[in-house]
Length: 396
Image (spheres, one colour):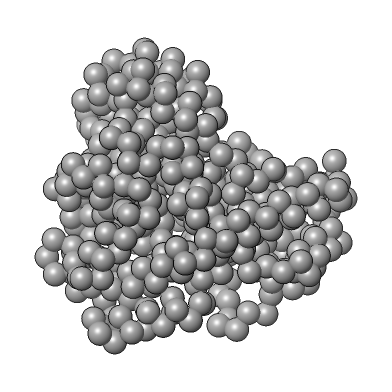
C-alpha cells in the first residue's frame, strides 16, 4: 500500500523512461515547430541572407589568416578557464582594443555572447536586486534573469514609461534594467537615451546587449550605446558578441573597470568555463582592426538593409523598417514560413525562418540579414526569389 501520498506509478523499464519525448515531438510536429539541422558546405552555393556575418569578415583573409596563425602559435584550444591557463596575450590585447573601440574603461572576453549575457546579468543582480527587462530581450538575457534569483519584471516592448513604473514600484533597493539595443527579430532599436534617463532618475544600472549594434551602428560601427552618447558612462554596461559583425566566435562585456573586476571574481559563466580559443580571439581582433580601418563597412550594411526592406515593402509584403542589419518579413503562419524559406533555399537564396517559441510575439517570419558585401544585383536576386516563392497570403 502506498501511504506516502505520491501519485507516481510503478517504475518504468529503462527503454520507456524517455517515452515522453515522443509525445513532445509529436506535439511540436502538429504545431509546425520541428527544427532541422542543415549542414552547409564550405563553398557557398546560395546567396546567404540567413547568417549574421554583417560585414562579410568571416572569410576575410585578414581575419581567417589571423585565426590560422594563432592556432599554429597557441594550439587548437585555450587549455583551461581564463583564471587557470586560458588567458593568453591575445585575449588581453582583444580586451584592450575592444574597450578602446567602444569607448569603455575595460572589457572581458567570454567564450560566447550567450555566456557573456549570463555572466553579466547574474553577477550584477542577485537576491537583493530587482531586474526590469524589455519583454522581447534575447533568450540569453532571459536565462540570466531566471538564474539571477532577483525580482524580475518584464515590461512592454520599447516603453520607457513602463520601465519607469516598474522601477518606481520595485521592492528591492538595487535595480538593473536590461534591454537589447537592436532587437534580433524585427531589427528595431531600443530608446537607449530615454532608458538611461529613466534609470538615472531611479538609481538603476542599465545593461545593453549590443550584439546587433556593434559594427553596424554608431560612428565607425562603434555600436548603439556609443551612438546614444552612453559610451563610458559609469552606470551603463554593454555586452557584445564577436560572432556577428566581427565574423569570429565569442562574446564580451565592456563597461566600467570596477564592473569588469567584479565579473572576474563572480561571473560563473566566466570562472567555470573554458576560455575562448586563441584562434577565435585573434580572428575577432583582426576583424575589429579591419572595421576600424574601414569605417564605411557599417554604413554599407545599413544601406543594404534599407534596400531590402524598401524593395520588399514595394512588392506588397509586411516588412520591418530596419534600424540595423536585420529585416523581417511576416509569414501567414509557421508552416507557411518553413515552406517559404525552403523554396527560397531551393532557388538559391538562404533566409532565416523564425517561428514560435523563438519569436516572443508569436508571429512567424522570414528573417533576412544584410551584409556589407552584398551587391545591388544580390539584392535584386533576393527580392525576386522571395517574391516568386511567397505564399499567396503573405502579401498585405
